[in-house]
Length: 279
Length: 316
Image (cartoon, rainbow over all chains, first blue to last red):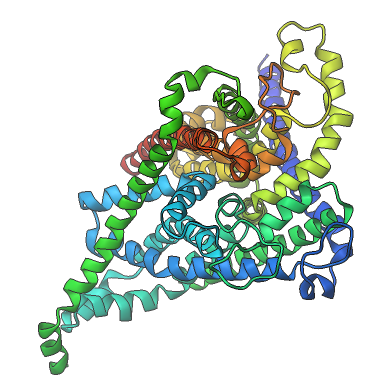
């Protein structure tokens, strides 16, 4: 009887463990299939022309140069705007505001923005655009991406700033250094690699964002490096080309998808390397 | 040094700097309010035209200026529920495997791989869904489900429709794959809050691993798990690109999972640049407003659960 019971329990345990293994292996296999189809369909057209030629009309050869330039400008602008804002808000939360009511409200709002669907941010920037410049532009796309990046940078940076040893700060304050100098010269410096991690993770996230660019940066059939005009970007081109019925556009979409995935995974890995550096 | 002190008295750097950080923080709140107000303002024409009726009419006909949100709202909810049903047990198993079963080093590797999945942009999932998953489901999975469920009541309605590969079902599966990394990483964090003393005590009296999971881990972390699940739900509700590729983008009311439909975010992504006149864009704006409110409520609930879980982890 006891033998029997313990056999049942052992069986149950083994089944459970096996199930966990199987499920996890399947999940990893799914990831592998995604990466595999990216490689299989994208690598064939991965050549110099991809980087040196502009997006072609249906049926002729070309590359993704203008889309890459557009993506570079839009995400670059976005992240340059988002870094100081995100870091300053994080500074307020971790250094000055701490547990005040205002800080808690800001933290809540930050969480709301963090979980807001990115397409909503696109709608908002579209509304903003109507009131201000009145036309689609790379700049509007950059603003949308910045709004997505700011809460990410704020969140991660706040966590990192908490890790700075309070003794270090107190020692500096005791020497009579003003608090803003303590923050800039000591807190930021000792949290440097953590802040870089935060920025890289935010960059990795916004580099692949498509939805907020659809009706802000829009798209441009001509090569354009002026952020005040509509601008094509890699994700939007991938979306348009993948949904098109033309074979050469679909091929380019796969190459672009491979490129963007490699870049984003690399950014993630570099970010983690920086995260490990902080002791 | 002395100079510094004098300088700081003349020009109060602290006041300026702290003020600056504070104002940017307040700016974040202003931003959220601005988002809400602009969504409301731009959806005003549609709210005036249809009122609350917008929520439960399904007719979506730009040509005759008739708009109803029922199909996208239902589509958003249906795809997200499918995603949650698939993703929650899988994420739980992955979290248990990483923390409880594998040796720590191997567990860290698996955790890293799952995190990698979270890094892949949603448009890639969408493309993969369009070119690989949808044809696969149409060929192998959907015909099988239709054939085997056709005589089972309820299920023959749920798994009905044509095996075309696109539709609510496929969108739900893509969403499930996308939210697994998020949910499993939250679950991992919550499981890590269980005091090892409790686990060891259970193992000590002879409990098997599955019994420890069932009687110790699960009851202890229930609130946090639920928080993670709801966080994943929020992500699924708002996801745009992955869904747009595979959902079929049809405003006809669907009655089965294999039928094409649409979601709020897919409708906006698909139609906004083409929307002419005043009513059409404003109907899409109101859809956006509805989505924003839904995700806001979902986030508020998940924060509640997660902070309860955290407090518990600290107190006990």
